[in-house]
Length: 292
Image 1 (spheres, rainbow, N blue to C red):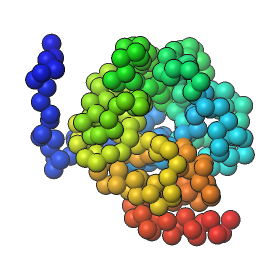
Image 2 (image 1 turned 180 degrees about the vertical axis):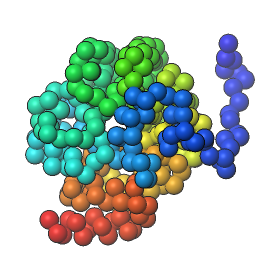
Image 3 (image 1 turned 135 degrees about the vertical axis):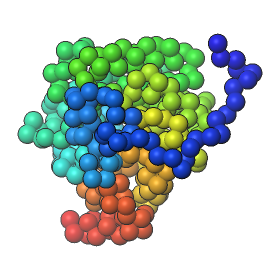
């Protein structure tokens, strides 16, 4: 059993030794089956090895937040420039064109809203997940939240069972409560726990020391955008995360709440796939904004 009095921080992350990707271009996928690899290759660009996921699942917690008042007007036009769409079944079915061929990462858990206690979630039905033609399934874990850690972990483990049954990758979303320290030690724990429980992708937050979070997590990591930042700060965060080994971003508010969302998702794509530095990406943003 783990002893809280003798948990020693990891200090040998092998940062100079890359993960073995000899059998597939994404780390941690060498031994997965054809279906998982095929779906992951839809999500992650095979040239850069990275992804720009567009997250618009906020509505099931927050309702029509700024930028998501009309998903058909605000999100659907951005889909062409994302590698993957992350949303809930209702908004995808009703407001994303069925002619859209971008892979879908389906938010597969649902529960409480911002009006009550968060994280008391349950999973969607297994048949529903399949009917949405999902390329990946996502659910969150609340590591460190005494009230909901066990139930969210059980939800996630059940989701991995479903994903394994149908060869669908599962993305672990690491929720962070208001009392939790947003530091590399916490995210190392939360990301590794998600991977240990079967995640094919982990979504977490960028922080100082992020290279250790990436190194200790044996599957691809994408960073959450979090709250709206000035464009240059969001681009710097994306750039720093990629430089630290992240395999992409899953951004929402920093795209759809931007003053020019289409320009912003193109600029983020420049960082993630082309290696643009933040100032170069900001120049692209300004150019695209002025051209529209």
